Every structure is written in C-alpha cells, then in structure tokens.
Image (cartoon, rainbow, N blue to C red; front, side, top):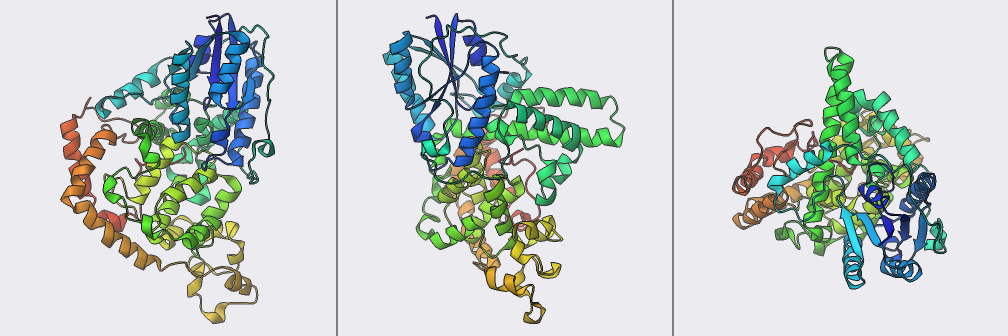
Length: 543
C-alpha cells in the first residue's frame, strides 16, 4: 500500500516520533489529527485542554508543512474518518503510537483495531515512552524502561512525500464549534513545540539548581518546577528526549562536581530523572489495568466512602470555599492557571478523601478538568494512592493548617489567591476562625463576613479516617489482596534520587513479601508523620 496515514493523538511533535519516521518511507504520507466528539464530550475534558491542543496543532502543522505534507485536521468518529480516507484514496497503512488514555480512548482503539482487521488495513503501533503493552510481569519493567531511554534519539524526517490529495479539512475548531461550554483558563501555559522548547531552556538554564529544594512550597514551586508536564501529556516532548538532556548536562557538571553550584545541579538532575521514571511507572499501572480509572485498585475498599458522598462538601471544595485558606487558595489558583505543584495536589485530594470523606471518583474528574497536564495514567493511580485505597501505600492524611504553616509561613500565597483574607494578621491567617472579635478591624470585617467558616473539624475528621482505615489495612483478608495489588503494580526498582537499585530483578514471590512489609513498616507513626513529608518517590501529577 503506497499511502501511509500517521494518526496523531497525544504525540503532537515531529521529533523522536517513530510512527512518522516509519511512515516517511512511503511514497505518499497523510498526517492526520481527528477531533473526536466522544472524547471532547467526556467528563474529564475541558476548554483549556482544547486550547492547549489547538496551539500544539498549529506548531505541528507548520513543522509538517515545512517537510512537505501539511496536517489534515478532521472532526468525527475515527473509524468513520478512516472510511472516508479509504473511499477517496483506497487502502492505506495506519501508523500511530500506542496510547494509554481514558476508558473512551481505550474502547475507541479496540474499535479501530476491529475496523482495520475487517477492512484489510495494517495498523502499526509504536510504544510510547517507557510504557509496555502486554507487560507480563513488573519484574521486567524497569530494565525495559532504561533500554528504551538509552536508544538513540530520532530526528524529524527531512522530507515527507505527499501527493497533494486531501479531504476537505475541518481545520482548527473553536470551543464553541465543538460544544465546550466553560471559558478557557486565563493564566494557563501555552501549547506547542516552540513553547515547550522555551520552557526546557528556561528550566535547565535557570531553575534547575533550586528544583530539588523548592518544589514543595506553592510559593517557590511555580518557578522552581520544570512546568514541562503539559508538554509531556500531549507529546510535544518525549520522556526520552528529556532523559538524553539530563545525561548530557550531568556529564558536563560531573567534571566540576566539587563546586557547590554543580553539586546542586547534579542533585536536582537526580530528582528530575526519578520523576521521569515514575511518570512512566504510574502510566504503566493504567496500561496494565484500565479498570482503575473507574474502580478502587484494592476492591476491599469498595463501599467505604461511596454511600456518604456529600455534594455540598464537594461543591465548596471545587469553588475554594472550604474555610481552610490553603485548600481554597490552591483551588482558586487551579481555576485560573490549570496548575498547582505536587504537594498541593496531594493535599487537595487528601483533604477531599479524609477530612470530607468523599469517594475519589468525582473529585478525580473535577481535577482532570482543572489540570492542564491531565494524564490519565498518572492521574488515577495518584488519586487512589492519595485517597488510601490502593492497599499498598501508607496513609497520607495531611493537616491543612500545618501544611499552610510549613509551606506558606507568611501567608503570601494564601493572600494572593484568597484576597478577602489580606488584612488578617499572620498568626491567624491559616485559622481565621480563631481570631478574637476585638482584632477584627474595619478593613478585615469584609473577610469576617465573606470568608466561610471551616466546613469540618479537620482534626476530628482526620481521626475518624485513621480509626476507620488502619484496622482495614491490618485485616488479614485485606492484606492478602494487597499482596496481589503489589505484585501487579508495585515498583521493583524504586529510584533513589534517580538511580535504580543494583539488583537486576525482584521475583514475584519476593514482591509478595515486600507487599506485606510495606503495610507494616509505615504504620501509625508514619500516619502521624505524613503531615511533614510527601514521599520523594511519589511522582506528582507534574514535573
């Protein structure tokens, strides 16, 4: 078949793109992107996602056109689009990356596979980053990941042949045309390869030394974090591309490792490398078990919170009106920017799950719409981990007042995003409900009137969560299933600041034993300490 169709999905780039390289060997290449109504109507999609995608598509089209074949953008159900291509041009070979997306894209890919078989179309899929399709055992995953990262970078094809024939294109479509109702976020990052490249330079040239030590506080994280996560989520950058960048910079700094500046850079490189590893590690969970988008990873937690879902609590949490200043500041920042750092993401879902006792599914969908860098394979395993329903992670029940004191001691972040509290003194900024009446000045009266009282007693609800969950985790029948969860999803080679352990493999039998140990090593003491630290090995929803 002379025609090759390159189906772009969440891989909106021309560099390090195996399907495009393979397709470029054909005498005629048709690059294709499809706006899919069922994905756009899905409850995890938002207008900001569409805006970011459109900006990526503009850059992608320019890069492809400069190589001889513009991007064809169509709207409709994918197999219907493929039928139109067959009707107009005859049979073709379909090239794409494997995708680990939501349940809708998973079902769609199965339909596409059936359609291709029924119509004599060859579909050649290439692996995405370090995610392994049909992985037999987690024992093999880390070594496969490193093998993939070590392969040479793929350059963009110099020339892509095109006959010039095309279907009538839909072109870039607006949110209104596609039925997206809400407004775009005014302060979100811009999409596209050009912006991605600029952000790579900004991070590695200016912010890298502070990365390791400044990523936790919302005050410093906005600048210190790489802010590359949306570009990874939509594939304008590849993980391998960043790994090669890390190794190159590391080699440059190792020769002067005695200098303090180089030492900080090397430490931050290790932290960043570990997060790229865990980026793929978490996506692998959803690839291996797509059902965890919808149901608890450990089924022993079924029914734990579902009957008690409180819509009022959920609505106030979404709007940033819980009465807890740091929680509300984070939600309001998200509403404007589509981004918040990892520790604050963990705090938000922990508060929803433990203090409000709401099941994770609806909060997960809301945050999926709020996060510009929404990546299903990271999102749902992380949500479940922070909600305490995996059976293999210790409980992380954060104190929203203490986290505010630790991460925003002067209340600068809170006052920026919750301006009605701007005149409240520092000693009361995180617990304004404790401020004596005589200290409420005329200027602060507005805060007293407009800022809500706490939605719950956070200490009492945290105690209820601990008293409910720890006995469950210790139950013998629960521990049995936890071992099974660990064997399927647990990491065999935890990166310690970017370096895997030297042992090549951990057997499944050893993994089962490790699962049992994990449940007892971090018990009540770890729960009490969970306010102080977010595990360095817990990949955030961002890098």
